Length: 512
Image (tube, rainbow, N blue to C red; front, side, top):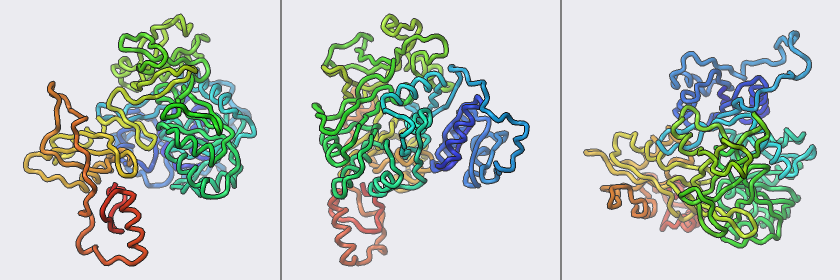
């Protein structure tokens, strides 16, 4: 069941109703491009779509699913439903642990998003173990801020509700750090989870004003630097800090690192911790042999205890929906059944480089392939490159994460098709109709040809650094004289973005 509802209680109620009825939900963010939503509906084979209002009219037709029933919550009057024939208690029948619970789509290296299928058993085991790690109980008031199309968002509402706590849903729209801090005070929030970069902004805001109430914070999606960790400890004075790590394929966050204000981070970044519950983490070399402490290898996850059929098995997702080849490539037979106590189990190859620390925690060291993380999102560069090559004006394309004046930014490199001219604004506009905003490159760099290695593969290391953004997006007619306040603001942003000059009418994100 596709759920394309705006944030609110109806969204949570829909997820719970679908699970209780024995179905599986597909969370869809209504703010994402229609073309992407249509592609996900088509790939998942949804049998029903839940919407509110007319914003998504025609989406079923765009997905090639004229037969797809659509239920509009705006026209649904629950109070008028005849429930005389319904039981007054919850159904005693529950879904089988091996039954599908949800499908979450992640960026695909082949240019097509791939759906990760998660069953009830591994999900329930994760919720129980995570609640214990977080100290969740009936007094918990969890602030929920993440998009429901993100797998971490499922943990943030499921865990508090499973332990009798309360979920405080942030409404649609952006919050400034001050607004987030004020909302947490106003609603008595005890637990909150944010992307790593936003946690840093919260700490900066708290450091400049009154100290907020003590609470538990979770962060994840990107590495947290030692300096940011120290700032968060000083400014927010948390009762508990949790760094959650995990790909969607390993069911949300199989590794966590617990810390308190004043704890020391020895390396450049906070560690990603230890396995949650009875799951296992392995750091292996190319021959699938364990590496010693301090030696870099690829992180593999899985290895839950046996517990019988339907108990959650190896703690992993089923695999990629409708993609057995990709599933077999990433989900491999567990070479250590004697450790997991589960013959026939699997491990998930994360593609992340890591090493064991002497205290038994795992330290993240980066990606082993072309996948990158930006603003907390995993991005397969191949999907961005496929979208670029889908435009008639582009004959060759590459994408890379490059340092920018305000932090990492996604840069696209394009080679013009014969007789075509590259228009950066038109390219970005076309990409925005197909990709989520975090996958739209901040800069388009034109090249005569892509750099190649001696064996003919793309040489990403030879891709040039992007030049500062030009002022060409603003027409000459728009270059009106600036007032005193505008001049001050423009100078501040020019300095922050590493530009010689910037005009108030220039697009801030396109400028860097």
